[in-house]
Image (cartoon, rainbow, N blue to C red; front, side, top):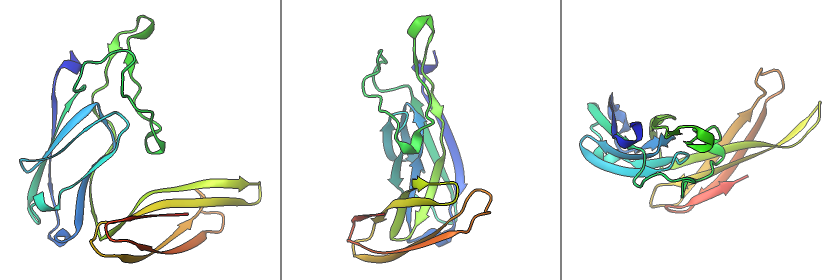
Length: 196
């Protein structure tokens, strides 16, 4: 059966030499159900959970200006599935469209989806990174709307960093006037800063 097997995915890619000295991470946005990662033959990390997103720093494992090999081993889980599946987490905002699990209810076969169902990304950033930006509506009429912008700044440096976050909000057609915002913040050494 599908869920009794291991499945391997391999991807060869090149990393620009200019990325040397930057903070580089592999991010898995959605796997089903458990995964182990290797980069250039070295273990990177493990994750478990359909709706989880994990990020692993890999700058020291990369070959800059050369080919690299990412390997992902997938399996249905580290323990046998039961109904209800203990430990399955409710999806958060970043994964609201997650895979649906069928645990054999109402005479249906027990299906365990298995695979990489959301992007695997290689991200290079400076010392400070903007994570999980969200724009939500506070109030709206047919003529105007008030929105709230939230995000988290993560400082990966060992020193305090001062940053400026700016953005533009437009409607889908670009018909309405754009709204611009600027936020100045100081993020402590190896710290985070939430802004709104």
